[in-house]
Length: 136
Figure 1 (cartoon, rainbow, N blue to C red):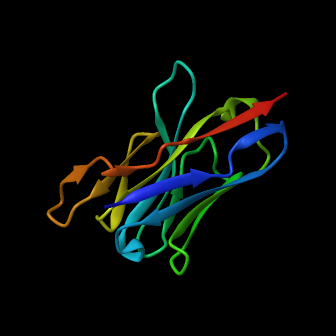
Figure 2: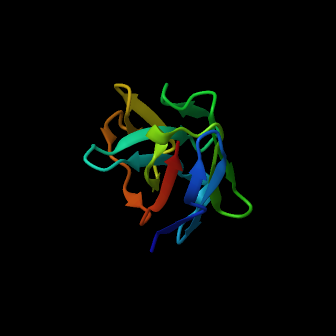
């Protein structure tokens, strides 16, 4: 049974930093693609960062240069280092996982996974989310 548990959210002032963690269990972590998503009040969920099973990373333009996604396969943990936070980064942040090894961006903010047959689908497994609030 795949489980994803996020932690590290909180309240910070504009310009501050936070590091989110996503502890994974129930599957062979190193072979899965992982992603970070967020949803602000009244807005749709958007993808912000992803990492393939081989460690290749990709980011939404809105966070590029400020956020860093990484994974520690020995600890079965995904991270999101967030620097220079802005009030518009306020949202609930979710991590996601899928057995597909590669991700695919569809537009600016939609991240799907690419199957071995060339089809794509949404991430299969999701955490419960952690709140990040950035004040000006």
